[in-house]
Image 1 (cartoon, rainbow, N blue to C red):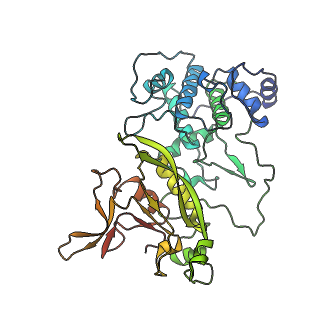
Image 2: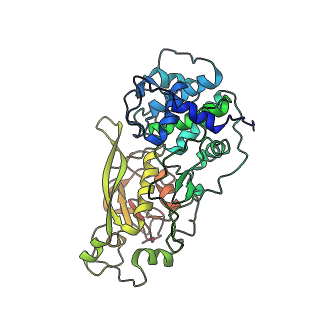
Image 3: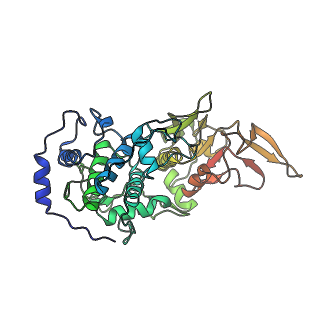
Length: 416
């Protein structure tokens, strides 16, 4: 990999501090980020579309496409051709079109671009890696991410890009309770996207723009955790979890119920143990278009972080699986019901029916209408992202969990 020469950090920071703000630029840039943002602005990385926008708000896909295009031009010294037409039915932004034709960005699996959708840190790394490749720069990883406690959460398709960006010091991690973490699913704010893009230009054009500027301001109250405090949960990709998260039924039971298992003898006891989440979802409009939305879901508080992560990944997935209805906790008479425990989730129950299996192997609906994956967009495909993501985090799917019945709507933490 190309060895990058950097100028002194002090010179870079001093120069950045005296750069005046453009007349129309990001608003309310955090104090810690101002030197880096001003340097990125001076390098021409801030597009006109971000003028007067909130610096701490998430950057959109269209906005970052323009930043990526500017980074490409800064590294190559060539101005991208502006051509008529657009490959996307939902976006005619010239910068998006130019970035797409250069291979810097790509559309969704349904052919749209989703210009107003936000991006996370691992997606940002993938896009910057695409810029480097389009510019003819080497992006072969030489290190690994094993020193980050959340390295296992990086999606496989982003692993190489995040490794390269870390190798080059473009994305060095953010401080979380005294430890550096990657936060691959952390939303990229506009000011952070400019900072990282500025580092990218600095690296690949061998200039000094913003070395020494952090990726995020450390929390004021941030101190190392006490030795006896539980560690943050970092679920890993694959079949298992880190030692900080339960891996077998005994550990799961202890997490949910504690040392004394009562399975909630009263409704009041159960409700006191629940937490209401606000999760991002995709919905289908009457004309069949997918729109971003949010909904509430009640689950047991002990598994709330992982459930939040599951639906964040489903929302950010290529399938953009639409959710029409969803349910988690609900009081049931059976003390063995996972809905009573707040550890089961049902999705789109009409289109993902529960059914008994006859002697002839035929399914007879007991709840819901049918299951038609590939035909009905609300039906959950057996090999799709929804099932894979739930299973990745230790949930069972009623579509293949039992031999006695099928329950295609149902995901459960204990497999009940």
